[in-house]
Image (cartoon, rainbow, N blue to C red; front, side):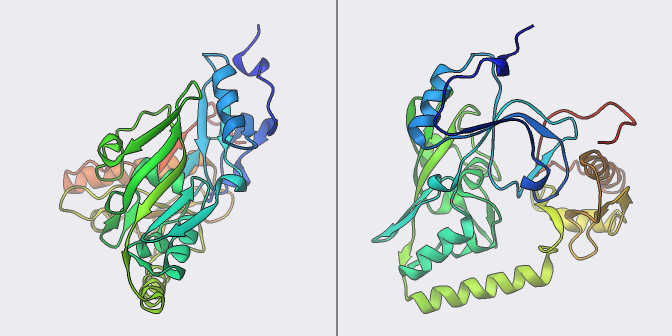
Length: 305
């Protein structure tokens, strides 16, 4: 029987079948993509989307900083934007960045240009595309605070421009259609001296280094903060600091982080997260919501990759 991935349209970028994703995500765990597509440019991506089979699932991944790929892998086509989608330009009080640009690189470009207000991006792991999709933020700031407009391709390859109102930002999410693939965004800050901006960025980076296990194999903050509460405090009070499942562990340094201490599977990590949720519910009566995006299919019970 012919599957959607068996008949792919011609592209100028690269296509790899049964592509391992484990080394592309920060957890260093998980299965393969049925197909991994790296488009050559926006036009190549648009043509692929326009010509693909209508029942071919599409998933987009960046650098995998806030992502858990289940051990059974991701069916359909996984799109990973290459470096050509990562250009950053500053002009006046605005910064234009490709969706594959690292958030930290956007912050540095803004600082060099004397544009303040984007410093928090220094502490946001991942790329602009992912930051747009989850309205990423830290230290009291988020994407919605600096957002001007975004350019995306819809599921048919049509180019769409979105304003802040059309993005529908709220805490760690947007109402922008799931079929949209962001390719570029424009952010705006305010003028300031580059030295002052860089000093604030360095302070943020030092605070992050001191309080988070950023050098571990982790997916960043695991759960969203419930309204008026802090997820890490709930997790700590529920006795989950240092809790393990296989080689997955709740970080001792910051217990809203799950870490892979060795050869943890995605199933180990997800099961640990679900156990944390259960204990917090029993202890605090609060239902934690995953912030980490979990994609793909699990393996059959008892089967390890």
